[in-house]
Image (cartoon, rainbow, N blue to C red):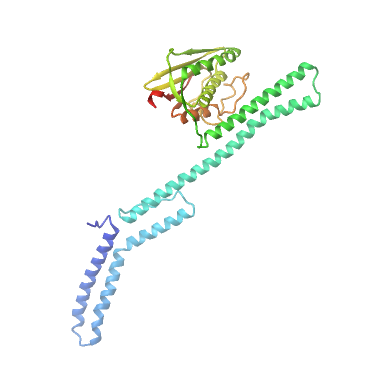
Length: 351
């Protein structure tokens, strides 16, 4: 059954029927009147009146529908000219109302796509800017040291060795920046294919802590582990996960109060394997805290240890992408300078 308000077909059929009835009544009234006159040509008058009255009543009844069609057409023209903030008012519940709703939905989707494209373009410009700045700094230092060596501008063999050591250190920093950029672009390209295998995360973490202990001692930090001697089985890509954990450990080394302590702990919670790196450092604001996992975000100079090499600002972002590719998540709990960066991964038993 057609609904007059919710179906344009119902409106049109109703308008046709009402127009026909009114036109027929008027025609009969006119016919009764003209039949009083003995002129033969007057028999055409009722038919003409019927057509005129029918069309007039029909167009009066559907004028709102015609007006709304024009409104839709104008709205489409606004959108076609690029005014994506424009929306057509949905005044009806019939098929035209559905068309308007779909047009507005299409406009919402197009606006979202355009906004994403603008963000992508903005990200590209930011990427170029950050790459240029981060690569230029060590490269300028390398050129300076090499130029001094080329011109034999040193007093003794110790100066010569120091220039070479500094240039080599900057080259390592440059290589790290390039590696981070390459890793980040690969992880965010969407076509990363990882090979997974089951491992005991506690064994892997034990080995990494052993390798980091001499570095930590060098900077006045104690690296302490805190977990029970029990297998923590996960299904992971070993190389990528090691990179993520390495980034968390390096972040703690850079931003810990010195002397100080870094605690690494491992636990199983409801089928999830949780790895955390805790340290104490200078506090950050809640706004800075939200940005720590953003690409190219770097801590304030006051937070950084100037004895540590500067990074690319991609470490935590890379760790986040790697963990998410494993179906896990990375997070931070921060309370007035006490930091706990954690990784949650599905346990092998739950996969």
